Image: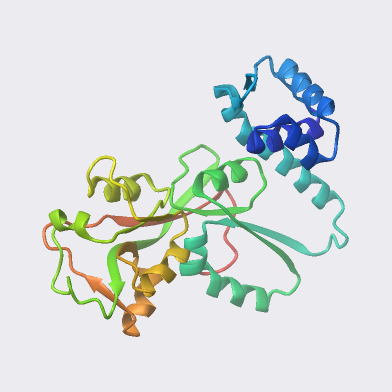
Amino acid sequence: MNTTSLETFLTLSKILNFTKASEALFVAQSTVTNRIAELEKELGQPLFIRSPRSLKLTEAGIRFIDYANRILALEKSAITTLNAQDCSRENLHLGTTNTIYECHLRTPLLGYMQENRNVNTKITISHSMELLHALQDDLLDFAFTYIPLKKQGFHCQCFKKDELVLVCRFSDTKYQTGVTRKELPKLNYLFCNFALQEVGLFIRQLFPDNYQFPFEIDNSTKLLDFVLAGLGYSFLPLSLVKKEINAGRLRMIPLLDFDSPIINNYLTMKEGMTFPFDL
C-alpha cells in the first residue's frame, strides 16, 4: 500500500475538498484524484461520497482513517529504529493520556531519566484507544490509559485509583455545604469529555438529554485553568486538583445525594515485560 496515497487520503479526509487538498500537498488536483482512485481500487471500497457541491467520507472511509494513521506511524517507527545512530543505547517508548502524565507519570519519569542517561526516551501523548492500538502495533513499549486491554499476550494492571470530585474557585461559596443531583443543571458546568465509558456516562446522565454545556474541552488538565478563573464548576480527578484545594485556590463541593465513580488508571505491556521504574 503506497504511503503517499495514505497521506493524501488523510489530508483529503480533513479538508474534504480536492482543490484545497491539492494546494496543501503541493500537487495537481488530478494527482490527488488519481491517488484516491488507486487507493479505493486497492481496498475495494469507496472512501468518499462525491457530489457537485460536497465531499463526504463513507463509513469505510471513516473506519480507514485509524488504519491509515497506524500504517504511517509504523513506517515512521521502523525508519527511526533502523536509522538509530547509537545501537548501544536502550530505547523506552511510553504512551500516556495527558491527565495520567500530569498526575502520576511526570515526576517518577523525570527521576528515572536523571538516573538513566543512557536510555533514549520517547513519550507519546494521546487518547486511551489510540494508545492501546499503538501498543498492539509495537509502536509503544508501555501504555498508560483509562481503558483496560483484555487480550492474550498482554499484561494490564490498575496501578492507581482516582476519586472524581466536583470543584469550583474557592471564592465561590454558593454550594460550599453541598449540591444535590437535581441542582447540578443549574450550575455553570464546564464539561470535559474524559473519553472514559463509565466516567463520561456518569457525567452526562447527571444532566438532561440534549443539555447544552456552556463550555466543552477534551483535556482535563487544560480545563483546570477555567475553573481556577471562576468560570464554573467541573468534575475532575482529585490527584489533578488536590494541590489547588490544599492551597485554597479551589473548593471541593460535597455531593449530597449521589456518589461519583472511581477512576481506574491502567498500565499495559506485553507479557514478560517489566516496567523500568516505580510509580
